[in-house]
Image 1 (cartoon, helix red, strand yellow):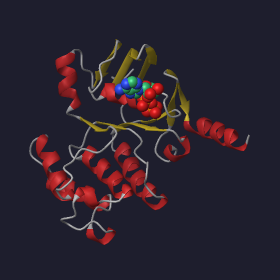
Image 2: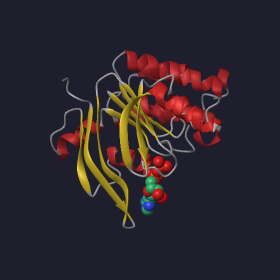
Image 3: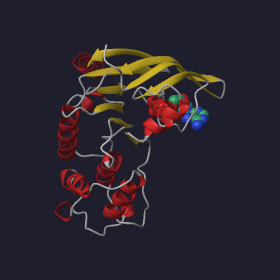
Amino acid sequence: MSESVLEVSHLRKVYQKRDVLKDVSFRLEPGTATALVGPNGAGKTTLIRILAGLVIPEEGSVSLLGSQNDRELRLARQQVGFIVESAFGYDTMSVTRNLDLRAELYGKPDKAWLEELRQELRLTPEYGVARREQLKLLSLGQKGRYALASALVNKPKLLVLDEPLVGIDRENVKVVSDLLNRLCGEGMTMLLSGHVAEQLQKICSHALLLDKGVMTGPVPMEEVVEEEDGEEEA
Ligand code: ADP
């Protein structure tokens, strides 16, 4: 078996005496795109916050990119791109400056890559984002695309995105899907959460299902979407 990019073992998280994650275990293989699907309150954000190191679980462990201990885990996080709730950035600075600053946090910014991200994710004047446009003035959809650009500045090996398609219109969902598909094809591993599986179908081949803190799967994406359609019709 190849070395997994992310391995989660027996995670348990308790909030106010209630288990919001119950014995969650899974692994991601390199170059795969996995959906994390579940209704509101299922525990998706809590799981992603644990992966990002923002929340400490009561039990269980996380290994990223083969990390064997806490120090290696912290270092490995520098090769992971996250969107957790809102996008990182300074509201009164421009999109371009924000992306430059974020890239500088990881070392020497790759200017060509940052420009490619701005172009591919339509964060350019032709799509209504002026060169000096302040982050706080972006529309919801533009903010969503900025959040993705910001998670990608360091060309991560693993991308973990909480609800990456929220607020993005149909046309731009295609823009985002095309970019993520290309990056996945080039070997980037992805975990993308959402409460509607259908939206993630164009990117992910299979899904992990989370409900009331209990994980099942992986399940092929078509099966999850079929079930979703059935529930809608019922
Ligand atoms: P999802 O992202 O799937 O909508 P969450 O991980 O946000 O689910 O929430 C899972 C459960 O944990 C919910 O019942 C939520 O109310 C609870 N929860 C999340 N964060 C906290 C917190 N900081 N304190 C107390 N309860 C929390």
